[in-house]
Length: 143
Image (cartoon, rainbow, N blue to C red; front, side, top):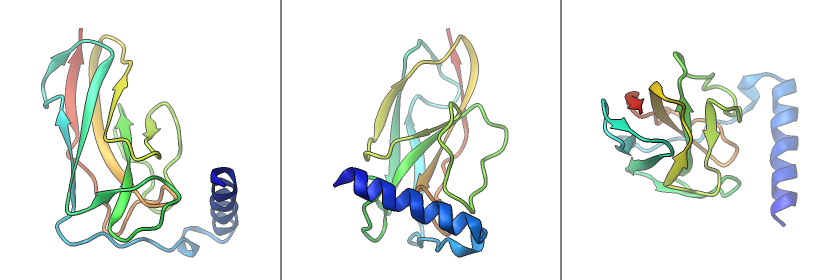
C-alpha cells in the first residue's frame, strides 16, 4: 500500500511540474506555526554524529503521504546559503534531508568544521506550507 501511495505522489508531482508550480496546491499552515531546532543550540561545538532534535509549535507531525490538516514532516537543510524553492516539493539531496516517516530527531554525520542547520516543514507531498514553516538557521562547529 505504501508503494502505491508513493507512486501516486510521484505521478502527481510529475504531472503538476509539467504545468508549472502554480498547479501544485499549497497546504495552509495555521497562524503562529513555528519550527525550531531544539538541539544542538546555535553556536554549539559538537561531535559527529550530531543528534539533531526538531521542534514544532502550532502543528502536528505526520508522515509524507498522510493528509491530516495542520500537520507536516521535517526536512533538515544542511549548509545551504539559500533555501531551495518553496514553490515545488523539496528535493532529496545531501543538503536537504527528508524525514518523511514523521521523525522528530536524527543523528547525522558531519565533517569537522562549521555547519548550518535549518528546518523546513513539508506537507504530504514534501511541498512547503503557505505560509512556509521554517526555523531559524543555526550554526554549529563539529570537532
